[in-house]
Length: 121
Image (cartoon, rainbow, N blue to C red):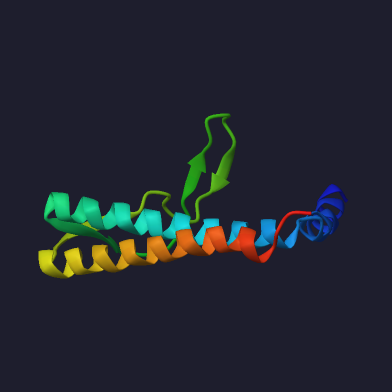
């Protein structure tokens, strides 16, 4: 029942936000995504290679796991992802970094534009 009440309150909470706050939240989310991508590309350039996720083999059969509290349950998979190194083209990574930085500047302008488009009352 509490979950139902909480789910009903989410639209009310979002409706209480001003158009400026909605605009800024949307742009902040995009900026956060771009920042993470920039960090990843910089790490790739620093290391000289990238990490790509690898699909792990699916286990067939029943496997049991114990929690730290001693509860026994059926395990459905692994929580640790696997990655492999792949070589990168440094020139392509630098071009990707430049494009991401350009997009970052555009998003910062969009963020400032939110205040101009939706002035506070």
